Image (cartoon, rainbow, N blue to C red):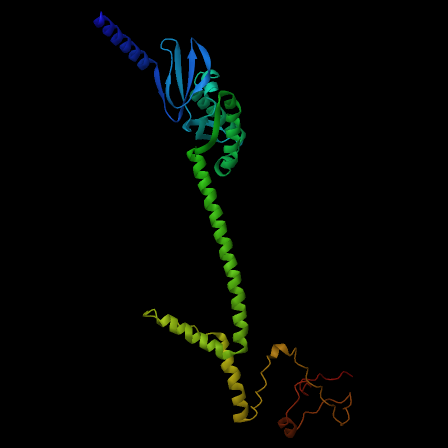
Length: 326
């Protein structure tokens, strides 16, 4: 009789141990338990630690309360300025209501993933390319609001959403590279022009100082020669400014005036004959005081003494005069 009682007691203990082992559940610190008994939700949420359920009647669902990092697959879209891009993102969320995460949605992870993809495509269509590249913080906030609105009813809180990468077509990359290169070149030219302007102002000031002190120009010339000679070149280029020649010319003029007195007057330059105009006609011969011969008398040939005298070429000789007619 005692043996039967002992065996029955051992059997009860074994059955109790088996029941306890099958009914015991361990919930981790970062988890919460939701119990469904015969398909109905139990009001109490099981906290971390050891908990018991009714085997065969209760079903325990463990919900992770940690922040989940979920990558959003890359989405192809066309921006508002008609540029085809490929954008991927990452979303951070956590469950704040384990009961809603189990009852309100079939799979909250899949639901959040699909909502993130659709919201990302919507953001791409509403934004410009420049906003996707430079104004990502604003886009991240808009994407977070779009995902968080339906996720609240699922017991999920969106912590943050980040756009990871924006892939552009190769043609667009080359165009943007040319644009950036042109902008850099423009800035370089502006900087060079500004430097030239400042240098010209300084050179103008230096020229004014050197014009007041000609010795400074000579010192500057010597400094240039020393700088060129320090390069140990076989050819030495020596600039010779015109201002130095003018300075030497001005220095020689007082010496010439004090040493030799007043310089002789230079001879008058010869004037070409063609600049003086046509030559004046010769003066007419003066008439002689002798009376004119009679008209009826023939001309008498002149004597030898008259033949020796020079005759005026303007007056015809006696031999050339015609006889008078009676």
